[in-house]
Length: 282
Image (tube, rainbow, N blue to C red):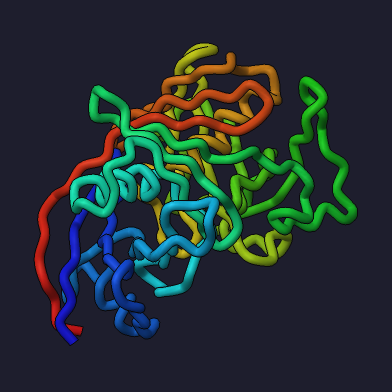
């Protein structure tokens, strides 16, 4: 089967985008992994599938598959920015704002006049069961009324804030993201037994109340150049803990994102670019 694809990236987080609006696209796990393979396929952190509207209240369906495992995942903020750029550039809509349905959320995506894209990421969820996270037997330290949970991982004692952006996140503060033990502590926390479905791990360095640096070890993907939901989770955690103001410039290894949160839905603004288009035999 030969299928067309578009390679896109948002702040260095890269994607293969597929159009399933006209006909169903049923790819096997092996085919999705081939698309994500950087040596034998196209190469991508995630595979994004643009589908027809699943109901009258939305414009498109939005499915996301991990490029390494081929498993479907719940949310991808950088992918959402690329999604709206794709549907507009490919003539699938002329709207500057579209509503899309993921497996568990309704998102509103807006292409701004300056070319950047703003995503209404929905509201964060703080209940441990939403991740899920098992807090049994742990006593959190409260900072500004928000819980920091003590965990042991990779021979270290750490404190993490946990929350869901539609997918699970653990955030820990570090003095310097460049020196942070991401290669060892990232996978140890990602697969920690208290996170039944694994977790995305954010390493947050606070530069000021309006500026942070962040590295993210993504669930089943390893460290990526950027993670939109990870940036949202880190900033929300920082606001709840009293470290940050309501609008924060977030510097990731692949670029910068602007995150805003005032207690409801999180808004993320950043770049989305087409790299190239092609076809592949699967």
